[in-house]
Image 1 (tube, rainbow, N blue to C red):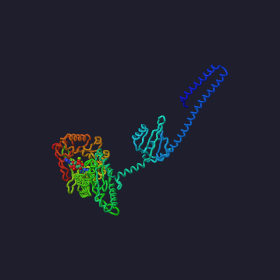
Image 2: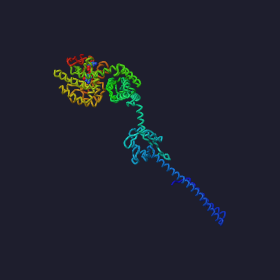
Image 3: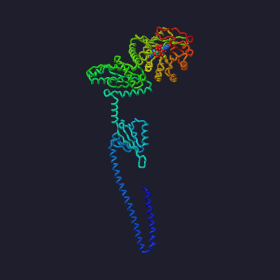
Image 4: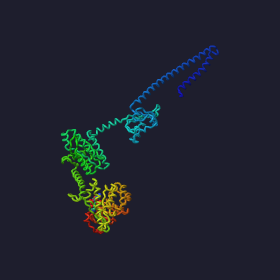
Length: 638
Ligand code: C2E
Ligand code: MG
Ligand code: MG
């Protein structure tokens, strides 16, 4: 029971007054009346007065007590009524309500909570709300939420939770911290509504705002956004791309002669076909009317853009059957490259439009780049790719051989096989021009296989003729090397041509190895087991790590001709050349310098103990029958 200080104080005063009254009133009566009968009468009167005063006091106190009691009673009844109302509101509200204690254990949930989350009350009581987390938000998100809740007493925002079924869904949630009359934290209350439907319609609105209703392709607005973000990314990626504007030729005629319905169906058909060409990093949009646009984000080469434009034109050229008609249409394409042509969206689109104008005015059904030179270059490359296919079938490829010499005595120890294309109109085309095209179009596998077989057969002939030749070196493209089936192809070719494995040397560029060093190591080990020789071509250009180099089972390093060109004057080239020779020596590898054009270069290399050399100074690549087999003067006498 609680002690009230003021009540205690009043009781004390009463006790003192009453005691004084009892003690002094009797003495006074005695003094006034002695022990007479009157005194007895006054004594009784005094006692009665005391009882009267005490009764009055008691009455006043009881009165106060009962009126308080009745006030409290009616307050409690009112309170109970409002609690009942609150509970009814809680239960009938559409918003979910969840109450936890200070330890975040759930102490109350309403019916809407059960409907929204799918959990029964008994399944969540005593549990913590983190059981509903969707995993969509990181720790930082929850930290911000708790900070606001603890500092301001509330938080509201959008949050993704998980239903009992596992489905994740968005809610709008208000969180509040509840304190008792003493200001102590007592509960947390969460009131939330399921906003799945709102989100869905928001997404639908967003889709409508950013897409063309006829073809469902992105519209101009979204396309511009995509181009903007692609332009931002190139500063990080350093890879360029292309923006293409595709415009149907004579679409107006179709619309006018066959009606808008057929026109619409044609646009849909075109969109469908173009969609089929899309790869990662491409966005196709309908810009309006019969104009489509495409951004090709990872397109650093002109040829790639030209190849895609050609595919688009071919797709559109094939007939459409619409409403019982067989329709033929064509398109023109304008291409603008970034960052070369432009660095802003507006400029890119303007350039693509002006390229489109060029394409249209040069006879339609074609593509044009923003600059004339690029258009010509691209056309030439595409033509070259097409005729390269015929070159293979038509026997237009040749293998030339360049001698490799021992620098100390000028003796020819091997030859490198270098492919050439004997073009019927353009004459001899160098591999530098057509190998990249072959790599892009996938023809490289066939070319390398052909060169390999041809070189092995030729080497077998030389061996049979008694030539003292140690090896024939064949270049292997990085594409072929990274495909992984090279050892099998080599075994087949050696069996077919009857060449000893030790007479064949495979040249793989340093960058092909560095593309996937672990895969390369595995492949080189398998090749070495076959007994063929291995050399790293263009060494010094591919950033090999020394650690990696040590583990590679190769026989030879070929110093890139870029370094040899600067000998014997350029100090950097001299330093690199010396370093590569020393490195090869310490790893027990042979070293060959390619691109030797002057006797000074040869002398420098010999002086620094380079084993082998190759270059115009000793002999250009020539057909097999034109090889000059005589020893050259030793490099020191050159
Ligand atoms: P590579 O393997 O580094 O070949 C050396 C290149 O340097 C050859 O060019 C050769 O003709 C040239 N060269 C030789 N001596 C000199 C010289 O003294 N001065 C100068 N400036 N150049 C010299 P080519 O034949 O045009 O071949 C270029 C590249 O094409 C080759 O570089 C090789 O990577 C590739 N290649 C050639 N044939 C084939 C092949 O059959 N398959 C594959 N995948 N690539 C090949
Ligand atoms: Mg080579
Ligand atoms: Mg080379």
